[in-house]
Image 1 (spheres, rainbow, N blue to C red):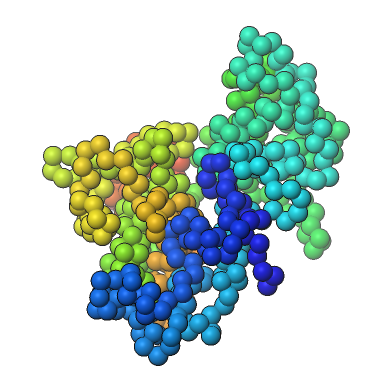
Image 2: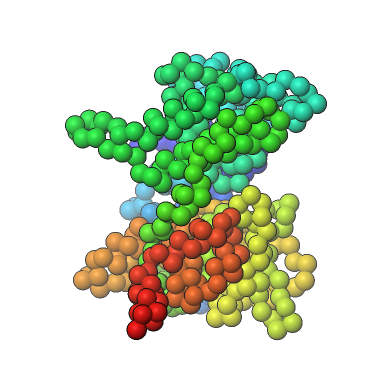
Length: 493
């Protein structure tokens, strides 16, 4: 593997984006802080004693490192595929190799600037991702987007965006509607790129010049069967088509509301209600798999995981498991001081988050998960219950700052990986499910528990989950036919 040049990497998970330091050691420290866990540590007995009051404490806090240092002068602790490994220095990969592996593993967050001048770090995340080169493929002339069509509104009094071409209007749309989540932003850019490619092929455009007939023709084109290299003809999945049309409809509706367009040619293009009615969630973990993961998370820390890291991992698992939140909703927002915990008179906890569209949501936390969260706060040196007005990140990184989305995702995946490793060999299906699971599977499980297992009224479940439509919440009822059968049997004895 070619040695990494740290300063050529750009972290896009902060505002403004930051370049990594020039040296490997400094870059490792930066990445460890950003991800919330160690990446590469060089241990000696002197270093071990320096960080612990006594050898007994060192043995308790770092048992794997302590055991290895009894036979070797130096041990290397490094991050590899979602877990920390400890090996003698002679057997360890180089620091540069570990750094590059970590950066490439989190390539959604860290971008390698392979050639050309390094961009100015004062550029915002949205500008770094949604410039013309990123929005359109290289084969598309970027000048194509930087125009205004017949429906663009040139009147400054009613055009509240204050821009005069589609390129600027697209940037503003993405910044407002998709910048809160890198996954949403990536999906929006992909669908707008697909529309632009089709327009170029059909000699249409720019976007603000498209008529209703043009957009209907685009809808027919993406719904039509496609010929593939294997000789087979396939039709796009309904969910994929609905997502593509929803993004296009959202763009034109937003342009119309803000005055950039005088009309909305995409009105009614996406059958949003119909898509929600037919959508059915499928990414579930069986109840036995969730119970196994809960038992693993409730157990003792593995030998290679420090006690503080394990306490944090258990707290992260409890929040995603028993609050049904999206991945990004646990990421700390400094300006909003969210997410945060509020206590009532009975010392019960309520989690406050900001969801899609900046909507605030309050989620009561079940009392069964509070001991884990209180233990984590005590491990951080905080009082077990958050005091009124506390404005601290719920989840900290190794250096005390807020843990980002990538770090949160890795911690949940680490629980899944540990649970899969502790399964007996014959549990192949459950192991495969755990290896594929992510934080959003826990959200689906939370919703299914409310709607299917306990028959919580749909409006209540909708409020807890933060769904824009109750139809999305109702889709979980279609995942269990046994309840439907029970209703039918009871109605027609």
